[in-house]
Amino acid sequence: MANVTHGKLRQGERWPWLFGGIRPVTRTGAVRDALAGITLAAMNVPQALGYARIAGMPVVTGLYTLLLPLAAFAALGSSRYLVVAADSATAAILAGRLSQIAPIASAHYVALAGLVALLTAGCLLLARLFKLGFLADFLSQTLLVGFLTGVGFQVGIAMLGEMLGVTVSSDRTVEQLAQIVRGMPQLHVPTLCVAGAVLTIVFVFNRFAPSLPASLFAVVGSIAASAAFDFSGHGIALIQRVTGGLPAIGLPDVSWREIPQLLPVSASCFLMIVTQSAATARAYASRDNQKHDENTDLVGLSAANAASALSGTFVVNGSPTQTAMVERSGGHSQIAQIATAAVVALVLLFLTGPLHYLPRCVLGAIVFTIAVGLIDVRSLRDIRRESPGEFWLALITAATVVVIGVEQGILLAIGLSLLWHVRHSYQPHTAVLVEQSGRWAPTPAVPGAFSGPGLVIFQFGADLFYANVGRFVADVRALVEGADPPVKWLVVDAGAITSIDYSAARVLADLQQDLVRRRIALVLVHTQSSLRADLHRHRLSDVIGTDHIFDTLREALAAISGHRVHVVAATNPVGEQQRGTL
Image 1: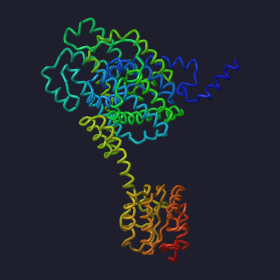
Image 2: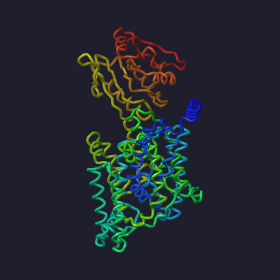
Image 3: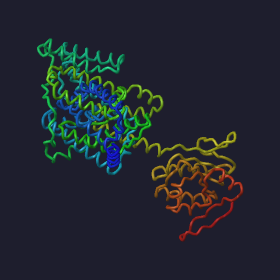
Image 4: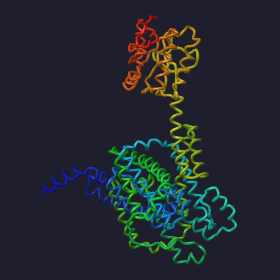
């Protein structure tokens, strides 16, 4: 027994990355997680059919997303909680592009979806090789809320036609809404009644019994009612017959010449996967004080999408809602996801026959409830209260998704996230420090502000780079020009400045020469090691003077009081300096 245990330990040490989201395994934990996985399957099977509908894929491919992709991530990912399966955001991104290339749910469409999953897997693997897990931080939570809200409206409107029994032919959201309005006289009442009953069941259960699989009850009940009362004979459309059995394994049957036109949608899916999966896995790992390696998760996500491509289904993503489901069900490891995959395999083998009786309006209603869940009114309300500017950016992102498209919406969201950050760096907080009740307090950096007789302590709240150095110089000159009494010492609180680029360094050197001509001594305080390295590399230490750079404001003020701070004269071509005492 000792030798066997030792062998197992050595094997675990040899492949520490394998099944990291499962180990260590205990009997009690395995039973608990398996039960949670069965519960997740009950909740997830109907939603998987809905996600396939959003993606424009045959409904059975939704079940495929709960099979090999789950097992692949469980084997190679690091997160113990993250559920990797079909997701409304990536499904909408996929359909938004592929519906313009091939007929929805056609063999060519399915092959293209598989190729997108394969390309996305390649993007995720490259991101792991280059350790690009940090890309998850480039889509702000604010704009992610706006993007998903737009997806919610887009998907919800797309389902209205099926729920009302009205024919909709367009793939553009605004045109779909117009067609629905024009088609209201042809509203099919039986279809609307069935869809309304499903909506009522799901919303009531979600409100009063969220732990129960409301969608499963709705699907099973509607299938039974459809078979018993001949829904098809009453004009209620049913889904196409679902072929049972496990998926065939193989590469997508598509020409590799089609790769260039699929790269943009693959990149969009990649960005959404990295952002949403990392945020979800990080949140649950932090909650339970567990280790989380986002780069290892990239390998697991890549493997999951490769498994999707090989098993004939579409892109998968780390789902916040499904992860919450398994956590609420008591699951604490990827064993729950393995159990879900096992249940789905049984469904594919033995229970796909009755799905033929499933009304299309029921599937549309379930998708509609998913769409409603994406519209996060509470978060939008919080954003509006705390940051009105970001709220409007979220609304612009949502409107772009609805009016233009999902792929354009995700790209806009990422662009706006970066621009919002650059804007804060371009217009950072500035202040003049004034002593109040024994401490230095910030006041607006307006012309005429000063910290003491002949003294200005200027605070700048961002790194200095080519775009914002002009504002830095303008603020400094506004403070020193026409000051009464004249400024003798300009102390820059550089606590928030961690770096200076080449362009900013050149401008700062020119500013120093201008201050010298005005007989003003420039002093830097709170300089971090990274900033000191930049000052040395750009030779600003020589221009400003190393004896004008201090760790603390107290040291700088003591040097000024002791008349140990001098004006550093202009540097001559050979780097020599002249000094004059104030």
